[in-house]
Length: 435
Image (cartoon, rainbow, N blue to C red):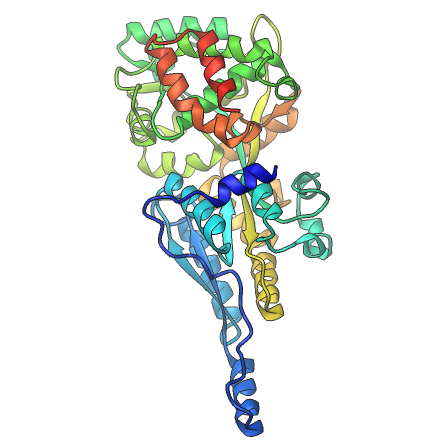
């Protein structure tokens, strides 16, 4: 583990702006022996506003941007003259991850940041650069969280991160396009899916949306569902040697025969564009995308959606749901007790159940906070909650279940697989080589 930590410390990413030093707050040395001046300086320090730097990805077109921005503004107003959170806008998800990694490995953690990688958080915690939140999350605020999310987020028995956004991932079907192709029932198995794909393809519609660029996000989610169908609830516990991962690769190979011609090299904008504009009929993504579908999709798309859990393979493992903690909040280790209290105040503010309910209703996202499901306004979002509660089992998606190096190797291995450069066995070998 020490070698992994040292390797992280050596990373230098391109385009990283300076975040170092924003996590720790050092004591100001006395420069005079004059008692009066020292007393004046102490008074000034007491009245100083505690500022928390927050490089934030929930800005711009992100579905959470408007309401989460309002939450930050509300916090700054409530604690005006005492605390202030300053957002540093980040709009590129991959660059954001690299920026946080490099910031921590070469300096200090930001005052506040989010991460979607528990493996990264473990390394950050082991480097001693994260604030310990165990006492805070074990207090009164603990009752706000669902199930075992707090316990599941512990690292060596301590909480260095707070679970926040949940990635609950349905398969989305455009009923209008399916009906136009003569498909009257939503597929529940891969055999039924291939039949539907043939009918859609004959109609000139892309059956599915796939991608290999960036982190191959939506295709990674399709692969996650295939792993669940082939391996069941405990596939990840057996590692990449489990036959489920090879069988899932074979499914993905076939899946790419039912997608757009620009899928190889496509990024999220391409995938979303095809589905949002009804060029593609079947799509997979997290619940947070519902807000964008509603505002950016063609007229009627949102109302034509039907959501489904995972498909069965050979009559087994149908109805599963893929999920994971999509975003954890963490904070840089603070030397100043006042800054520690400011972080806790902000985390308590953004976990208020009424505020989170508003955020959920506005974005379509789901959270680790226990909100009143009867007050969820989005009917599709409510459907996801009901289906996930009824699921025979739930599994985390592939990217959240494997080491970061394996997740990073997935896009290039997938591209080589679908181009025919490697076999499904070669695909697994590439992933294993990254471990």
